[in-house]
Length: 485
Image 1 (cartoon, rainbow, N blue to C red):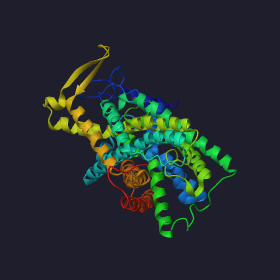
Image 2: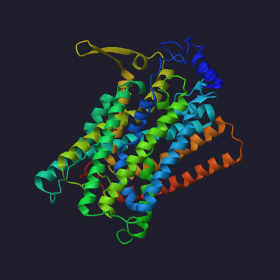
Image 3: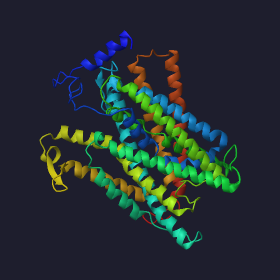
Image 4: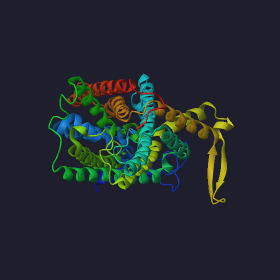
């Protein structure tokens, strides 16, 4: 390590917290006076993989079917590069000023407030938390469809493939909601690392099964299906081809979406050296590379197996019927993964509302007081907060009810990916980075960053339009609470 590196390392270790008097070298506290963070590149990667390799992977075969063998993989690679680049820009905004000694920004909104301020903070907060609500709804829909697919796979096995085996998704959404009420009581991000690791393992499990089944189907077909330009005009109308292609962009964007919780994940990483931004950059490289490899394999194998007939959800669209037990394992893994992913995404919103309530009514026993609850004969003690119990349970109930009203997996996924991609993944990271690094206006770098942002805005608007068209089409034949699969 050079002399500059030694000096930087010493600076990182000697930062103090003036307010609380705890040193950075303390065994219990970080430089900001909070309990020591213990996260590493691997735990951060697990959080990212849990958030990224979600239900979106299952729609990639359908997305590539709309775009074809040329544009499909190219668009997927493009989104991966944009996501990595803008995530690196966002990670540099975790601390204001020096990357080792600067003031920490604990949340995405804190980072925006420190660098942009003004009305942009309110806009960012609304978009971030609205997107989190949307993701919660999307994950509830996806989990219920996977639970329902287990029941249908068994039905098809027993009754034959000709039986429609129509089953309502509503009871399964309720089951998922009850599970989320329980897990939502985990107080904060630092205490869900085990759930993220379990969810990451589950994501690899069902992605690998989907990949394996796709490869087996290609062999059974005697060759690769699909075309260079995707689904043909004639199979769909020219206008439908346009809308479906745009929706495919939204599906792929959703599959890579995690920037809205990046800062919160970064806040779990142990104190420097090395700096949190360097650790986060490594975690982003690992996780985006792994997810892109899986996405390419799963999306391409799905399209190769079914061509223009690729289902909207690879494991629940019943392109595959057998072996039914393997489909059951894959869909059970999806459900377990989504239980964890739901919590990873929703923790920032939970924390924001609870912090606001505590600042607004600091002396309220309902909001501030915690009660000890003994579990397992006194071997475990859990602290119950009445506001946390009420608010988080109410949130889960509300998202579950909305999910029952809009159980359109592909269209909802595409819309969520579209509306969240540009503002949260591109615009705010780019604008904050420009301010943080003091990049001169109209310089070459500034112009390139603005062109990147403009291009992504155009993609976002077009993708959102395609998804809205799909949702409007679904609503023409949909009856609330009565839809079956």
